[in-house]
Structures are given as C-alpha cells and as structure tokens.
Image 1 (cartoon, rainbow, N blue to C red):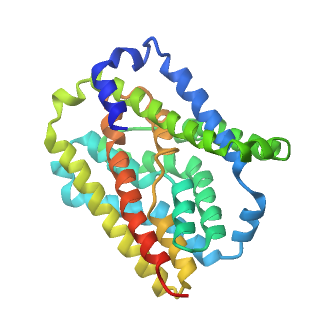
Image 2 (image 1 turned 45 degrees about the vertical axis):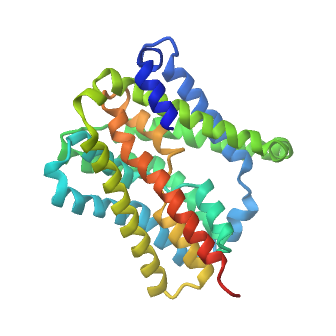
Length: 310
C-alpha cells in the first residue's frame, strides 16, 4: 500500500478520474470479481454452524455498527475542532464500515476460537454494511457538511457487492472445486484489487493537493487516532465478552470480529459513497492505518490466545 501511494504521488494523471487507466471501469470490474470469488469460497455449512450463537452475533454487530459510531461522536466532540474536516469524515467512515472477513476468520482460527461464529459474523457484517454503512455516514456526516444519498448508494453497493456474492454462492456447486484448487491465486487477486483501489483513490487526492495542503501533522493525527481507537475497542470487546460470560472460543471470535474493520470492502464502498471526491485519499487514510495496526496487534493477541492451556 505504501508503494501504491508512492506511485499515485509520482503518476497521478494515469489513475485519476478521466485518466488513461479508466479507473472507474477497472475498479468496478475488480470489485465485482473479488466478491464473486468470496461467494464461491463461502461455505453454507460453516454459515449454518455459526447460526446458533445468537448472543455472540448481537455483540459483534452492535460493536461494528453502534459502538464504533458512538466512539466517533465522542472523538468528534473532543478533538473534531482540531481535525481537518475531511480527516474527521475519514474517521467517521472508518467507524461505519463492516468487519473484515478473511483476517477475522484467519486470526480466530490461529487463536483456536469459534471459527464458525467468526465466519457467520464477518459475512453478516459485510451484508449489513451494504445498507448500514451508507446510512450511518449519511446521517452522521451532516455534522461535517457532507450530504449523501443513502438509497442510491445502497442500490449501487447491492449491485456491486451483494449480486456477485449471490452469483458465487449459486455457482459454488459447479466452480467450488476449481476455487479450492486455485485459492492461493484468488487471494492474491483480492490483494491486487485493493492496491489498485488505493492507487486510484490517491491519484485524485494528489491532483487535488493532498500532499501540498496537508503536512506530516495530519498523517500523525490519522495514525494516532487509529491506534487510540483500536486500543479502546479491543479493551471494550474483551470486557463485554467476559461480562457476557462467553467461553474462551466465543470471546476470541467477539474480540477479533468486533474490533476489525475491512479494507477489502471499505475502499470500494468509499469510492461508491464519495465518488471522485478530491480528498478521497485523506478520507480512507484512517482506515488504511487502522487496517495495518489491527493486523499487527491482533496477530500478537492470536498467538497469546493460542498458547493457552486446554
């Protein structure tokens, strides 16, 4: 991602809106294929196995779509006056996006947690995010002077994210074996699309003066805010799971699914929500920092959970 941002700084014309890359078309095709592949890889059996843990599901979805936005309201009330409006919008967006699927499930597995519950919650979060993410941003962004069309955005997200997911599930009996054989390559394609999205998003922002208007202080604020948010949410999810007397396996799923935010879905949704917004790179910056931090910190936590006896 650092290389993608650097390329955007060096060659912004190529990937910007209206540039030779035709970023809007390339990005939309890439997003559609990524979610189609997610549909192929999603096991209905795993989803059914996770259905019974309803208290776990309520806790995770409450953190993802209620607690995170409340934390943004607190952050905005305390520090909003010192943040650039677009960076504040970026923190709002970070708090509104769904949970991550692949990293949540992978880390839950490493930690010997409830993998079926993690699969169900991460997948449910992605589906709910099609409706709730634009709704939350549309409602709360009014404080930043931004106005968004919730209905139009939800329809676009459904066409670009839900439709390919459903198609993947429908075609799973035919193509599931092929997907399993080449899963390593499909995972690489997922990451490639994210990098293209990051590059295209920053191209527009560089042309709008992202690096000339904002200095290192803004980057420091984005990184510090993301780190603070992650620390608070990890503590809250752990305390909530123990207060609810979850067993250790369910606690692990709650901590990793309830604290995660997706970059794979987050950047595409941002592009649909904000279009060719000149500050799109700044808006997704907190999410990019949060994504890297959550992988590092949660990997350490997963190893600690995995080392427990029993």
